[in-house]
Image (cartoon, rainbow, N blue to C red; front, side, top):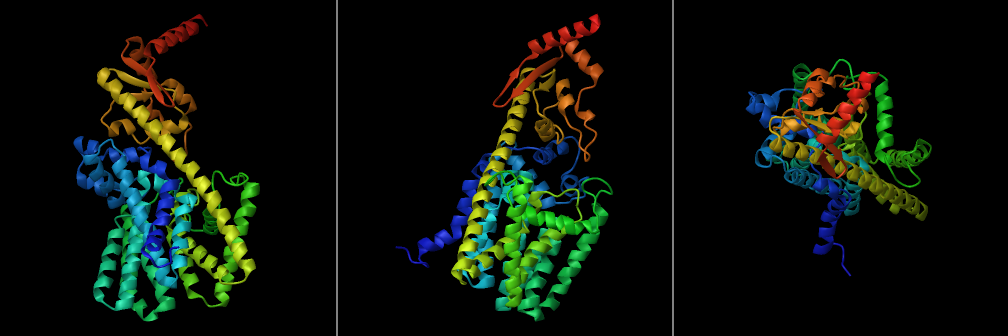
Length: 495
């Protein structure tokens, strides 16, 4: 039998949560590009067309974001060496997230002096289905990299607290400032340190004042240089709806989104399921307050503070915004589980059943979401590779694509997927226009379709090649399409 403390058990402690995460999201490691990925992959093409590296790295997006390191540089560097291979991107994402999982286990252990809490915190974070986006979509890398900055910086801060050596203080400053190039959420980092210092070592609070000043200065600069939209889904609303948005995120954080026991995605079943888990967490919080357990407050801060920047986005509640807040919720849940096991048998059984229900339903949901992302990415690859082959075979012809779903249209065309690979003159066929649903945040989709007069000219003069996409295949149907086009025109003439 292995005794706890042996090398084998230490390896299990460090590696098991990450390995479980890999088993859940292994399809994400094999996924290709999709949606926003194409906008970032197109940076080299835009530079070739006259843009500059400086502009590509530091120009804000229309949504009011500025992430030079985690979006722009990440894609610029890797796409230079691997222009159409997604695997290196996915390896970097997975390696970063596995480092995060290990850092979380270590952080929870340092804060609680409990190996069990560290292990369960990492495990609960790894199996949470809301990690699906960051584990399956390269454009969400900023969440993983920001997690590395938050967790890594916090460890450096704890080193400074424990040793008093200034080198650790300045190193965490370096990580903190680097985080501004990763994700806007990094501005809450000083608040996380302050939450710990307030309960554990208040004399350290004074040293954090310059960090709050840096966060305030960056926030002011960001609002000036990359302002949010005044209207639309990315507009900010500082009102009572922020509390409603918080409650929505709490429900999403503890319950599966798509599948699970008894179809938990259905509201009549999901609501009591989430309610039971939230009630259990509130009971643990009440117990911590009675016992004056300050670490529970630090865990709560790790949930609330990283979530605070997105609460004003009441019209854009999205699960992947929970990637970083779930660090705090996972630590709190792990602490509550271990404390329950130290209590009576009734508490042990109750806590164990709740955790098993969460893990079981969460894993099923996460695997279903991973498959959904993977299947979409494969369809994107099929369409773009088919168009690329057609462009080589017909270098002067217009390419029309038919058989696309609304979702595929948005995932390939809206972020200029073909342009990212240097493929020009590719348009959806007219039938796609009838199923493409206009969205409030992007109403002008006509630009992606060929003008009716130009379309008619291209078809009549045989200047177009028509490709039909079906799951798993893409074929040239130009002859049949032209025949149907002629029959349709003839029927209109008779009318």
